[in-house]
Amino acid sequence: MRKSEHNISRIALTISLNNDTIGITREDLKLICIEFTGVLRMDQQLDALLHKLTSIEAIQVQTHQFVQDLPADTIDERNDEFISLNNRHFFKNKDIYVSKHNRYAAYPEHTHQFLELNYMYAGHCVQYIDGQKVELQAGDVVLLNVGSSHSLEALGDDDILINILFRNKSIHLDLLDKLYDSDSILFNFLMNTTTKSQTEPAYILFRKRGNSDVIRIIDTILSEYYFSRNFSNQIISSYLPILLISLVRDYQSEIMNKSKQRLNDPVMLTVLKSIEQNYATVSLQSVAKELNYNRYYLSNLIKKKTGQTFTELLNQQKLLQAQLLITSTKLPISQIIRQVGFSNKNYFYSKYQQKYGHLPTKTRNQN
Image (cartoon, rainbow, N blue to C red):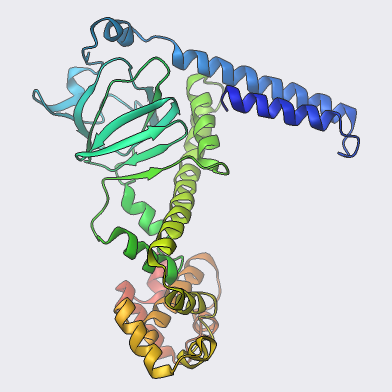
């Protein structure tokens, strides 16, 4: 929450205090005011801390030349144009490392052996990720993959960029794919139309959204990190998976919106939504009737647009739902087969093994 947001919150609270219909007691309002004041005070302390000059900034503001702030054993490779960072310095028995990016000098191109999240706390910045220019505004988040390289232009007085580094090298952007892999055939199709590439991305950019949980989670992590109290490390560790899943949710929503605009094909969206929502009972005939299309014409159109037949798309959605039920419920596999719309058990097992490389029982045992 920044100064402008403080003002909005104060106005909202004032309105609530003057509203006789809110249905809470005066004692409750007092508690709200006390808690709200505490949040403001903590936020103001964090804001002051982040705007305070670091020892490196005190030099860079005079020289505008980059000063290395990392110990020598953190740097695996270095030349005039490139730095490769390892994780020996950063974590020290913690799951994440948080730091403010030093202002007033450009940061040279570098890469690292861990996942990095850049959070634009205030102001703006320009950086180059794998050679691509990326501009961040206050509230934006960029998630950089393991091994991606980036450099940054100099930050000014009011530009506060937060670096959050994750210890676990197994957490990389491929994890995001796995988290929403069982979601829907519609999302997978739209995702492919947007990325047009099966290679793992160097970064994912999250623009600030008014209803995003991500910013609130990051601000909580910052407060716990910079104003450490009892169990702060445990709280931060607990927030890590929540942060990642929230990023996935926001990313998924953003990709869906962009992809729908780019696809701009109401017929295919109707087909895919029908499969997604009614996979257990839908048929090519029923979708053709809904669209008032000839069944054979629609079948050829689907193949042309998606590269797959209607049956292949339908089976894919059924298998996604079956895997979700296998991993998240204790339902018998025979019941799951019927529930997702397969009438032939042997056919289901054959298609499941073809897609996932093993039988459903192994999926369940792994979870």
